[in-house]
Image (cartoon, rainbow, N blue to C red; front, side, top):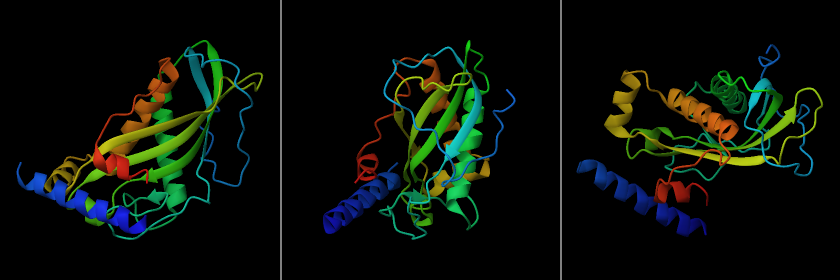
Length: 219
């Protein structure tokens, strides 16, 4: 499987390269790291109520998620992040999620007060090599759980959300950086929109179809 995946990655990188050549006021509680309590939702109690206002946000990035600092095109691990200086990647990702969840839920002023729990399960941005050559896909997965803020009762089943976005590479990445459209900015905006859709539409966030690299991210 390892050699098969590597072959696919090399083929995909070559293909992308060839194409490129041609053409409240508890909501502000601090980020919660792994190891601290995380509310587990119980059995399903019906569909999410989309008429909500979020009063508290908890983000958990489990320390069991494996981090890669390797510079391959698509490391086989849980966390790949280069948009901050070298440091605690779990905490950095937790901060990104917390900012994004606040941004996406701030405008919501529904009738039902809720506590929102987020558990990150995957955060795959680009390595330096991929960002400055082929580009790829930012692939981010998380579990969303809602509880009634007054009763603590779970509101629906936990939802597994997958949010992907095209990741710039080469000259496109450099031009985006120059205008302030960093990886962190794009991913924060993606997650803010994903959570807004999850909480305001019955169908939730609809992840786009982004082709081969997106599929390889899940191997």
